[in-house]
Image 1 (spheres, rainbow, N blue to C red):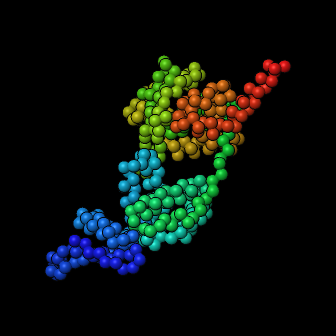
Image 2: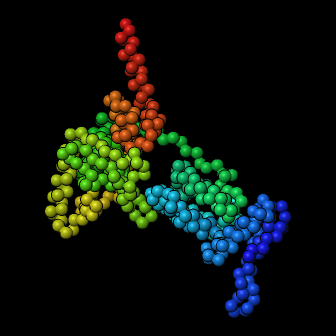
Length: 382
């Protein structure tokens, strides 16, 4: 039975008997000072601590390090977080946060530690040694750490969250760019010159379906119906802690059917023939384990990082230094809205969780369209 005695304002000392030591025969006790509003609350906490001690999973707050706590938090979070989100958290915590802050006692973690962490990552946070991480990346680190420390407060491992006192790096909203037809032609032409038809097809599909990179790289022939000119987004290829892996899409809206243009069907038909030739040439050496649409010549997956590097080289050679792969999705959205497709239809095709996302992202496209309506009305009134 736990014994509780008052030490000061909102401070109580708990003493829990651990029974006799089998070697010395002496009684053993667990002692800890805790914070509580009153004795009843202190007794309740003492009972909870005693139960966990007897169960063998209680760690005294002043003994736990940031590393031990974060590992415990990740394990607990596995029940609440989407697998892709959990994997992102694991990568950042294990590769960045633990090496810098892991040895510090959780109760001794101060705002200055977090501030110094942010500054260091902005200055020299890249693992390849080529400078600092972007404001967006470091802000994501901060968000994860703050979330974990919020949970520590709820668990009463710490009194307050030291991250709250720190202002995370500001992130400027990236200006999205829609490619014009000349730029599209140049990009596709360069992809074919530098690499192969698969690379050309990936970029083509991104422009003319609006699919995300992971959705394209994770697309299976099992989910493509060339006779119906359609495909289903059912999985996405993403980087995880142990390499690239197929995951289910984050939201229900991301799982969708996309209907294809005749030209897009022709691109996929040609790609399928090329794969069949490669399979015949390589025999047993060809291994497309997941029956993916976009693979290397030997059937192996094209990892997100590998394609990112490939795309960077292509856009630079094409003289399109300011575009990102995600801008190809933006280009498709712009095409749709300029063609008069409604926001609702565009949102469904893009897999946006709400129509608000589509409206907010593409205001710059819809404003000129609204002006065009006014111009038409003006001509009608003359």
